[in-house]
Amino acid sequence: MYEWSEEHTMIREAVRDFVEKEVRPQREELEFGDTPPYDVIRKLYKTFGMDEMARASFAKRIASEQRASEAATAHSNASERDRSDEKPVAAEAAKASGRDQGGGGAGFMLLPIIELCRCSPGLVTAMGVSTGLAASTIMSRGTVAQKERWALDLLTFDKVGAWAITEADSGSDAFGRMAATAKRDGDEYLLNGSKTFITNGPYADTTVFICKLDEGNPPAERKILSFVLEKGMPGFEQTKPMRKMGMHSSPTGMLFLTDVRVGKDRLLGETEDVPYREGAKEAFSIERVGVAAMSLGIIERCLELSLEYAKTCVRFGKPIGEHQLIQEKLAKMEMHRLNVENMVFRSIEKSSAGAAMTLSEASVMKLYSARAAMEVALEAVQLHGGNGYMAEFEVEQLARDAKVLQIYAGTDEIQISQIARNLLA
Picture 1 (spheres, rainbow, N blue to C red):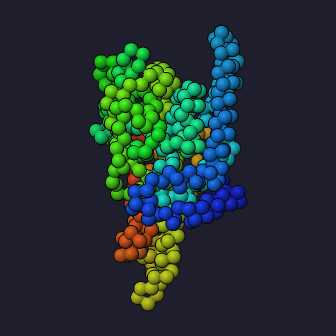
Picture 2 (cartoon, rainbow, N blue to C red):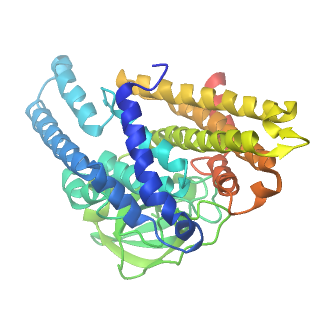
Picture 3 (tube, rainbow, N blue to C red):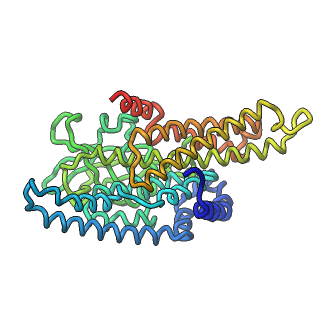
């Protein structure tokens, strides 16, 4: 894939038209009026039938998982010598888990991300954490009953989801310094701890809470578990939105848990014995590919605005676009746009071929694209001069929004470490 197909282009234009009519007029309120973004996102879902597509896809996936489970049960008494007969069952389970995507669906899923990020990247963060991280964790780790209970409403955006892993004293060492705990209390658990920088935290209806099982053993030896919490549960506090540098249209908050009592039905998978880290790697890979798509939207819009300004702003008797230093800025912006776009194309091709991005590949995508978005956005501000520093000009917002792409889903430093470890292995 070297360019967007005709069908891709039609969808991009349709989403761009939606953004111009429904999102851009509310940009000021979303940015500065503390207006939650969820009604806009729900309208996007309904306008393009994304809720119905999610509902249909969910039904197929649940049916597939049930068939895989029945087939696995039928083969449970097979001897080790005959285990090769179970390969079709494994393939069916892989499809059910969402790892075998096939087709060109990935491209169409990335298009709304790119287009929304041309105007309000925070909407993508709010949407992606809910339908991506929160829902995908439940879909990959939960039982069929848990998926039907919580995941479908998140996938259709009928409810808002949050994914709570980060703590004030953990940062990039999310698992190593995790202090939130679950303690057994008879057939139930008591959850305690706090989480910070949680996207959708203030408003989430459903929260995936990640913690360690405290059995009196050292923290480093504790199992990592995930539970599903719901708004209003006794002992579960969701704070008001936090003030932050950018992504104002994406509410961020803190969570506090004080002896929150939950049954085993809220423990994802209803077992303590499934390792968490592998599933987390898959979630991180998906998130990092999404950051590349977000970066592409920001880069495209910054370049578009900069070209327009370079043609119309006259200094020293001619448009600034005729000055060599400005041309260099524009050329670098286009260089980054092409590179990030090609990375996105590659991820779509791999998905279409049924091959998932490795964590290292996703880290490369995120590291380069986030840095490119930040560089392009800052150059766009510089090109606009004093106007670029004013909130009335879009490049000011895009520069603030771009910075977090180098921080969340793993900082640049974490990406570098991941890439280097893979190279040296």
